[in-house]
Length: 353
Image 1 (tube, rainbow, N blue to C red):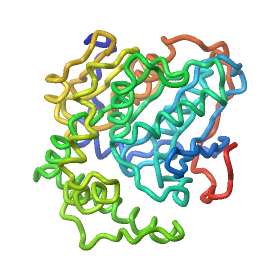
Image 2 (spheres, rainbow, N blue to C red):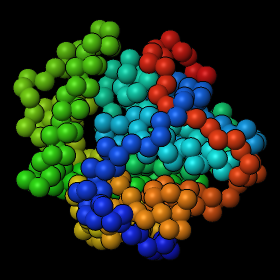
Image 3 (cartoon, rainbow, N blue to C red):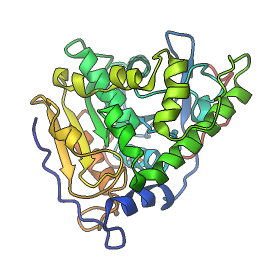
């Protein structure tokens, strides 16, 4: 393991702790921009489909670098951090795909099975489709929160074998020990997050039952008491794991990270209320993985003082500079400013574009 050499994160004076950073990450809006992406529907091996939103800068050329962004729990391609990071990458000539996980965003009607923390095969299918769309282009995959675990799991599983044009990866605040992180959410100090996620997930289950024709009845027998209970009642049962405990065991990336063989950045915060810092300290990271544990930043917050960066979003700029350091882009900084927002609501018949 190496330690990434980044500027020290200094929290915004109005957001001095992890809880405030985490809440601000959700409720402090960024400027919402218009949607101008090309949607691609990706066929998965089990017949389900997901959507990727392709933002291609005017100066991009075949063979230039590509990035794939994957959102966290209860997110989608239009989540604030997905829009911000995609916009900054495209401005610098990086063609950027934003993936909706199964049943999320524009793909709400396209998947019969739900997304979960272990769907590394779905990520691989998207990387491989990007290789067909952009032959010869190196790809960096960026996973936020839950998708950070998916990305690290994929890298550990593949080891030396590779996947499409994938040559580097970033995992931001990844819950690499799922059981530890889920139980941490049940603490009294984290109850607000636990309730937020459960409420969002229950609404997603109801939406799936309404929008997916002929879906087997997977309605919850009762309202879950927390995320662990939800995973026991729904995620593990519907996805074939049996119990939440088994789901967490099978899908955690921590046992696999020692097998990662491509340059990888893990970005986390010591004061993240959801992801305990200890899980990163006790993991067996190989030399090719850089881990940066910022003293502050919360969960996907990292809202700092803008000194040294163009704006206060410290997380965004570390992702951008790390990807730019991989090289492989000729479009440069002259690309016109792109625009991003929610995709058309119904892509059920859009096909793969």
